Length: 113
Image (cartoon, rainbow, N blue to C red; front, side, top):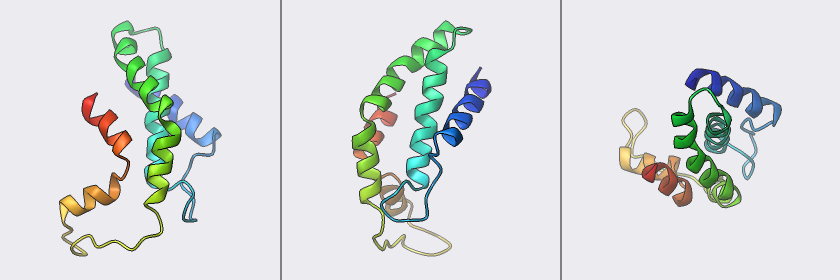
């Protein structure tokens, strides 16, 4: 069920044109991954073959969907700034996490579900 719903989510991601853009201020990899999670949770919440799985993902999907504009804004605001990852081959993991996970709203949803 997980892989079937992931396939549906990837299809929706492509059809909805939520792939990353090259321009700052537009959707990047972080935003594209948000939409993949949103669409995957939607497919899992809407399927009828596994009620337990459906119930588990309904709340997550609701939280992701209802906070969409805030999450995308937080993700896009991080773009275009120079960052220091603390190295080229061996990056600082804490600095990298701050840079790669700039949406406190999304982080709270992920960390609590």
